Length: 96
Image (cartoon, rainbow, N blue to C red; front, side, top):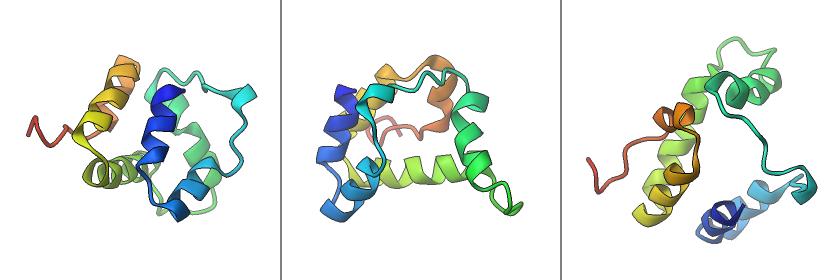
């Protein structure tokens, strides 16, 4: 949960509001350890739009984040992710 707060601190105010919208600390962290579990909420949210690929959507969001927050923060997030989820994140800029 600390990494989530560190990430939020680097987001623009408006985006930070969306980030925290509906967040309930009592229900975190979510225990998604595998890509299918992680992507299930996206799949459910966009179930009526077959043009949305949940994995592509997640990768696109992570790529935007990786380009707008510090390399150190992205590395911190990757460190706490379960190994099966790490491939969804882009390689940090310092590793490219």
